[in-house]
Length: 338
Image 1 (cartoon, rainbow, N blue to C red):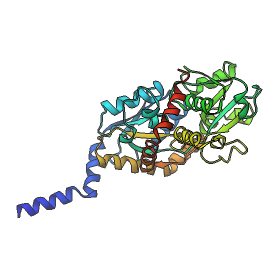
Image 2 (image 1 turned 135 degrees about the vertical axis):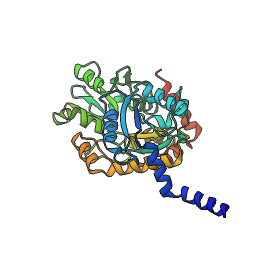
Image 3 (image 1 turned 180 degrees about the vertical axis):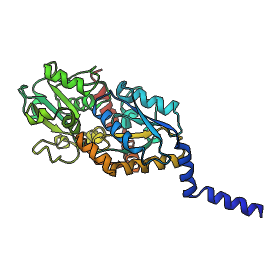
Image 4 (image 1 turned 60 degrees about the vertical axis):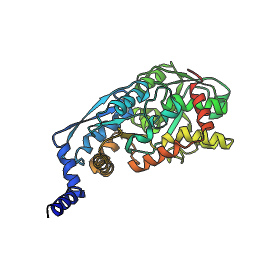
């Protein structure tokens, strides 16, 4: 009889309802942290803070969330720290730049395995563009092979750094990258002041959110888009994959430009209890459909076209199987200007 009672108790405690109660009990009264791998005021920061305000209503136990910023090495320092030091209890969530999922293959200093991170999801599949200021005497992307273009970047590992470097290597373009800006807002100021000529790899949503007047007043010329499918707001702007001339070039572009598919990812470190990972993934999914979240995102001109955590996890695994020769080619391209 005692054995039967014990077995029944184990079944009840292991049931979905019991696990949900355990998750709610854990999170009740807790303060969670979103740690953003970029500076305050940029698009990653805006997205993170918008999610933080709404996801608390969908996490069992209704904890609070604070947002912190750790803008060092394109989110590499932040990811290394969370991966290796935690805490690994589901109270700290990383909001990295989208170069992080492939960083162990392509960047020095990555001390984590992307496939072992617990990906919660991504807010959007985002169009990324390269543009120049309206006074720059360039109107087609092919002209980047004919004259040097000065473009801004924060640091290595970011789209604004890595995207033009790969195009330089594969297609002979002449982007010259000026690094060291704190974030996208500072790069935008530098463009207006004439210090640099443009940005060769930035989210279209970020351009719209931070500098809609540039678009309205035709202050910039969009030279290309890096996303897999044409964006409806960018008619006639060439897709980067259409510039590939060989299968190896297409594979190299796929490895790097897949970032546009998981453009705004969120993760937990490894070893977080599976029931908490599941609860936070479902909270993320619910937030992406929450009318309050969607209304705030629309007000801030933030695009929402989410991927589930499971989909991000699968894509990260796919990219990890890229042939070594292609990985080596891309890595060499990214290290060329160091």
